[in-house]
Image (tube, rainbow, N blue to C red; front, top):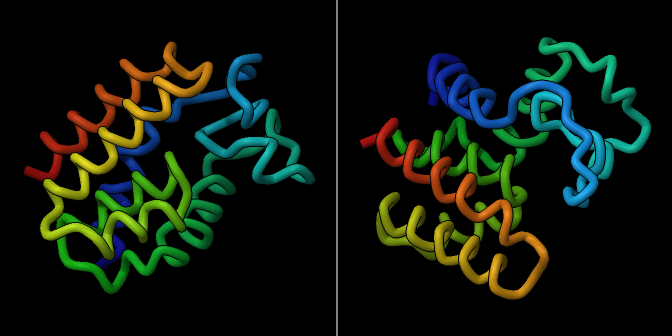
Length: 139
């Protein structure tokens, strides 16, 4: 809806995405402010500035997902989900959810199923904590 909602959504997301990380078990590779080498192979991730990250988040996640046209709290929920699982998946949940709470349940189910099938079990607790914090933020 507004720049204020984007700023609030971005503040929430950045609390979870943090600074520079190069976790060998993360298929995204080197990551800073949640921007990963896999998605942006030509970007110098270690040198990425917060202002550059904000521009990427606005253009490639907030705008790409159409969050500006969504009602609160869907805009914030869809944005953070797009950052974490991709715009396509976030929009799929948005288009198939009856309410934002249903959307978040779909997100949790996705994480649980992903952790069952892959090597990502170590990420499950963090994903669930992030989703619950998002619920508390927008509730």
